[in-house]
Amino acid sequence: MEDRGHFGYNRRFLNEGRYDVTPPESATQVWRQAVRVLLLQAALAGLAAVIATIVWDLGAGVWALAGGAVCVVPAALFAFELSRAAKRSPQAFGVALVLGELVKVVLVTALFVLAYSRFGGVNAAALLFGFIAAIQGYFLALFID
Image 1: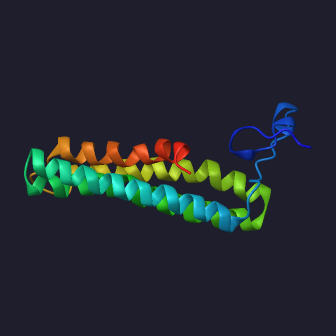
Image 2: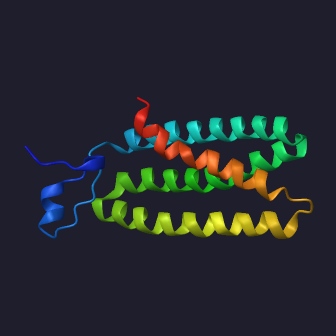
């Protein structure tokens, strides 16, 4: 039996210097797990929008929802590409994992710049509150089955 570390990757090969990054699940299972995280992130962004509306006003709630979208949209694109790469090969999965994370960071940065530069009356606190709330979906998904 193989020694599997966190996320199911083959630890023995990783320790020997071979980079086996093939997920243990099928592409469908990868996509199902990603959808679960994305739905949790969207729910947390919605909760942040409700809280921001109560604390500030309706405009702040909209900005909190936009902050959640800054997190959820790049994560959804990353999850979609990762599940497609899981169907191809272990090498494609590894490349998609690394490049997808890089693209996700660039997209998040670009969306924040867009929000601050193109739209007037930005409630920065609400925008960041929505983003931070949504990003917690990654961590909460670890504890929710």
